[in-house]
Length: 505
Image 1 (cartoon, rainbow, N blue to C red):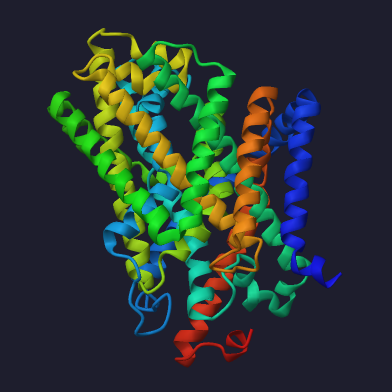
Image 2: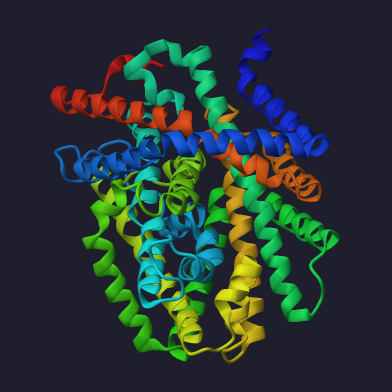
């Protein structure tokens, strides 16, 4: 019994993951039906809650950054950051949304342009402006505010208060020693659940995009055996990386990724319609900032409600479901930085790079579409994973760019899967910053095997919806985290010292 208690989070989480995976293989139709009903019910009835919560997280992040608490360090008073700014930003971005930026940089603006809300004319100038503004919105401040709240809580209570780096630890000011009992374990199990199925779906979808890119370059059909091979290769690579640790594995790959992405970005800016890209960037920044409040709180109940449910509310639930993984990883690399430095850097640098990326690649796609070249929007509508590669076909060195992007996608997926494996092992090892290798291997094989099996059985989308459904209870957890964090910060600022009862744990 004591052994089970020590490994309860690991055992129960693994059983749940395997059980749902088997369910997806044995009866994908029923799992699809169940997950669809659950997902649609949550989005329909609680969509406003996702919007409101994300806005609260953004406001709270800015308040804490500019408040009297901003100078508090995530660690000892004289502790220095372990990673350089470049290394930190590289890992921050790779874990947060690097792969999504590559996937959606062309696909999302084109999707919104061709299928905007019903009150906006399709393929019009208004649709183009709407497409860019909401692409910025979906990938801008709000997602990072969600990540910030989660990672800030974990980093503060772990590095400042001496608690284990677990989400349950952040609730000590509210529930005390009960974090070590069933309530705490339940919180950590829910975090593992969301993390596993988030990375499973991303690994599966990413393998599909990599296969599409290779197929367009080498002229072969994207089949399941090819996708399975891609997953196997990625698995071997991220397992090797996970065994080398943060410093030699994830950090090196993340730095290489950012440099490669910047090189690709610069090339497209030079050979593409540069002036149009700059116009789109400045115009969309203005639209985004002036419409921020309206977009943050409007579910569009009279016009465009279905579109908002399909896109914005889906995204907000997705970011929240990903927050345990990203929050845990970002916290682990942010020790030694002040709260103000951590929040402002996270809110400014990654979103700004994302805005530039969408402006360059989205702008290049709009240039083709508006001039009647290639019909790239229709291509995206037919197969969303081929949007970026269809864009390359109209520019110099198209095949070379496609190969570079496949490499970039592959490395981003290695870093994401590597980060997730590290986080899962840490969450199921009582927050051990150097989790045992066997747990990394078990989680690595589990997520890759589950992705491969469910891609074949058609159950991947159902599990994606299940992961998003986990965002509902996690929204409440994060709102309580806000209260717990403020209580902890207020106590420290008032007394000038850390809570000794926390340090004893």
